[in-house]
Length: 231
Length: 231
DNA sequence: ATCGGTTGGTTGCCATAGCAACAAAATTTT
DNA sequence: AAAATTTTGTTGCTATGGCAACCAACCGAT
Image 1 (cartoon, rainbow over the protein chains, first blue to last red):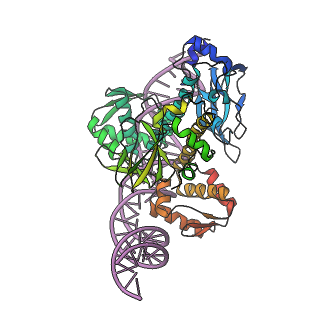
Image 2: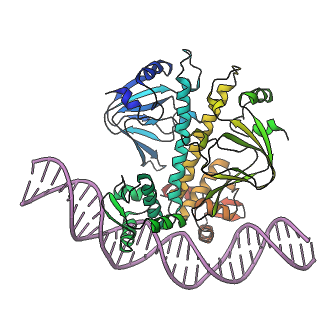
Image 3: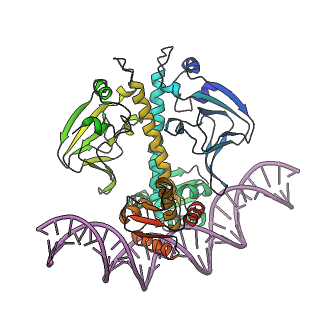
C-alpha cells in the first residue's frame, strides 16, 4: 500500500507531493486504523470526531429508516472520505452510517486542525484549506447536476440529458456509461423496465443504438434538443 | 441601512460583533456598489472575481437554457450571497446569472482573502474561515434534504414527508408552510392540480385539514408512516 | 458442457399524475 | 366598493411510467 498514491486520489491531497503530505501528517493528527469487514465506522446521528479516509478496502453508506430498515445511499472506495461534510456543520453529527464492505484500513485526520493555524507554520496548510473548500464547493456543483436529472419529468428527457452530458464529456458519439442498467435506473430514479422501454423507443426512432455499457449516438442534434427542452 | 445587522443574517458573519466586522472589512477588501433594478451582477459562465452579498434590494438567479430562454432558479434576499460556491471550485465560473430584481446595494468581498493568512494577524479570520466551511457544508446538508423530496415518487409520499418534516421542525400539529400552492408544487416538482387533488384525498381520509398556508395535522402517526415508507 | 448467478430485454395491466380548462375565493389595486 | 389580479379548488381525459413476471443472454466456476 502506497499511502501517498492513495491520498493523491483525494481532492484534499491531490496536489501535494509525498514530502509535503508526510509533513502534514503531524499537524493533522493523522492516525491509521485497521478494521474487519462489517465494522461500523460512522453511526448516523452520532458526533463526528474526525474525518476518515479509506486507504484500503471499501464501505457502504446507509440511511436508517424509522422502521429500522437500512437504505444503501452510496459507496466509498479507496481514497474516498467520510465526515468531511458533517464535521463542518453546526450539528457535527453523521447523517449516514458508514459500514465497511470488506476488511479495510482507514486514515483519520483532525477536523479543527485543518482550519487552525499550523504551529509548525507549515506553508502547505493553506493549500489544504483551499482544497477543503473546493471539495465542498465542487460537491455542491455535483449535487446540482444530480438534481437536474431528478427534476426532469419525462423518461426520454432524463435519458437524453444523461446521454448528451456524457457525449459532451467524452467527446465521441460512442459513449461509455459507467453504469449498468440497474444503476442507471437508480441514478435517474426510475424503474428499470420503463427506462429500458424508452431506450428501445429511442433506438426505433434512430436516435441511439446500444449494447451493454456502450451507447452510440446517431443523432446528437436530436438528443441535444430532447435534453434541452426537457423540464 | 445598518450594515452590521444585515451581515449578521449571513452565515459568514453571524457570530461577529460590529467591531470585529469592521476590522475585517479591510482584510476582505470589502467594497460596496449600488445598482439599479435589472442590472446583471453575475453572468453564467463568466469568471467569479468576488463574493457578493446583498445589502439592500433583492435578486433572482437564472439559468440560461440553450434555446436562450431563462429559467428562474432561486431568489436572493437581503443578507444572501452569490459566488461563494463557484468561487471555490476549480472552474471559478458562475453557474447561474444573477439579476437584480430592484434597485440594490451589493457588498463585495475578496475570495482568496478568506483563506489567506491575515496580514494584520486578525484573530477573527479563522472564525470566518470556519463559517465559510459551515456555510458550504450546511448547504450540502440542505441539498440532501431537497433531494429526498425529489426522489419520493408518490404524490402522497412527497406531501406527507414535507408536512411531517415541518411538523417536527415547528413542533405543533398546526404548521405553517411558508409556501403558497404554486411554490410548494414547484418545490416538490409536481403539478399543482395533482398536488391539490391529493391534498383533498388526504383531507377526506382525515389525516389533515388546511386553509391556505396553515395545515392542521389530525393524524401525525399516519403522516409519519406515510412519510417514512415513501420511497 | 452444465449449472447457478447476474444482467438486460420484454410484456401487459393499471394506478397515477400531468395537463388544460374552468370555477371560486381571496387579495390587492383603483 | 368595484375591478383586477392572484391564488386556490375542481374536473375529465389521457399519456406515462411503475410493477410483476417472465425470458434471454451472458459469464464464471466446476
